[in-house]
Image (cartoon, rainbow, N blue to C red; front, side):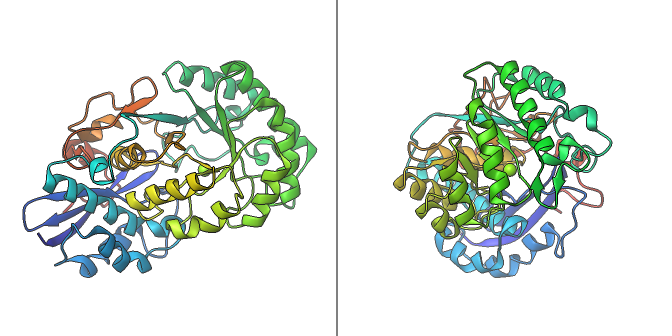
Length: 395
Ligand SMILES: [Mg+2]
């Protein structure tokens, strides 16, 4: 079998989802997905072009030699959204391999530790994100950032069956002068504590609750914030400082009781090594559409497990990258917490794919599919309705 073509369809969901299709001379195609991005963002090289420029590197190759092909394309990726193209292709290669053997992807990863995967819901704030270009900003939307709005959102989303909820909570949401330079003021910390208190009251004492909460950049500010929210027994606080600051994270993690988390912008398992070896955070969060794909996510979980750390994969994509996550997570060791779901405000999220039981998320879990490959195909009618302006559906 040989790779003959690579195609892309950029879908506009709450974020943009660059879907990848790798075609072969045996009529088998594989699906993948590059990292989500906001339609308001601009990149020097758009995600679609990043994927398509890899075409000449992989056309003519046997798609089932995945690790060798990954080694060949790895140098074309980098941290953050620049890891998306390599990841999207890697995911598609596993889909092809599974389909060609007639087995689900988790089987070729060594089999499954579990048959259903816990999914946690990223709720954003008092309003979930339905379009990152219009409702991701705090300015002019202050009503969605009050403690009452957060609590109301938590109550509404909890009844959908999720067993973990995560919210974004940043000092800036406290309003004007919440940060002096990069130092969170006591006004900001007080506001953040009031939100956490309202959330805790809304979901109940023992319900797992996490925060994504960049504290401006100082280690001191992150520690002050961590200590202030320690009494609320959060499941984790995420990216409280810059993710590149391994030593800073280690200092924060040692100073507070609440578990810490980072990793969504890290590219390749090798780059997780210092963070994990230093136990600089308690939980790592590789993004399968950034980190280099399915095998890299499994490697991160394996390495983290050796050091007694947990893994909670980041995902803000379509059902394609979510299913890639589900197969990788099925084959992860005991340290898996849950996979992220970020599209609670996208009513057609399920409709974008076929071949899998609906609703895809039931009672806060996704069942590991047993169909060959990833187990999902694109519904092109739905995809065409939600293409980014000027984009085509794998043409
Ligand atoms: Mg995050």
